[in-house]
Image 1: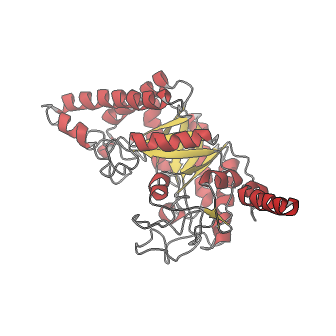
Image 2: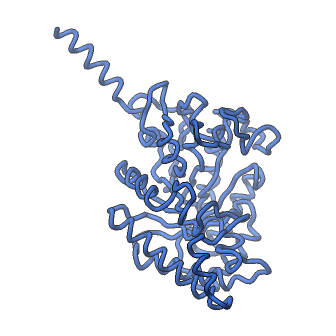
Image 3: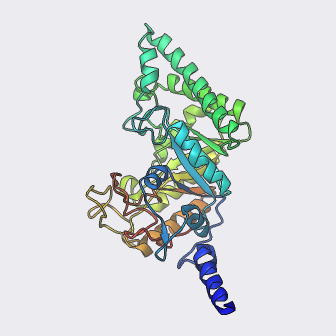
Length: 367
């Protein structure tokens, strides 16, 4: 009987141990960057639909796996009134609680839209649009949107604060290179007056409600210093109060020359005396797919010559990017879509860029 008990105990201990206790990932970087983050905005939907994250064939909490990967920040996007409710305030608070319970820092990415906000689309939330239509002049509409941004930002932060999960950093807009809340906050023609009024309202709301949180202004220009310098220069001239310059950088969209990225980060850091980071990046570990939805990246996309679309190539890319950011004096890198495994009911274009293979096993990628 005693022998049976000991055997059962050993089995239990093995099954319950974390990846950290079992594994030192091949090629683990142990980066010294202050912010080593992933975006988990797909996690809620995937988990609800039954997606499981694994290590060596066993189910594990994704948060335990991320700890093994030397991650210390998690980012979530927030949509105002999304059609399917994913990434709304209620769902975002639910996942933010898990982030905080697992002792990660939390970056809240407010889109100020019901859906994707990026350089190609910055759509006014539907509820705001209905009220906006009642205003008769553009001036009245801009005034309304400015106040709405302030009120909404405070409302959102009050909701997180009430749950004891105040964000450690807040993005006031997502990839807002071309503005936000179109057409009133567009930068078309170089006129940024309305956009800067919107950002002034948003950042002041964050300072009021979460004074200890850092504020990030986020563009998609990791490889474009000309546009980034112009844009942040306008923000400086308008006295926008923020702490972190956040840039998206995807080699297959923004060019494969990491030297350009390094020079951009160095220039922005020294010119504007702000922290700089890459707040979105990703890289394929395969050109294959695991569902019936075409992938965002595959054969024919530009990749780094010495970082092929393999697990080793994906890890090498992350290592090289972290080294570039460190060399430039930057403070962080965030990986987008690390959680994006395939599951029935979820149309996935990113599974070959996730941190998990097509059997949902962690690839071993780590900071």
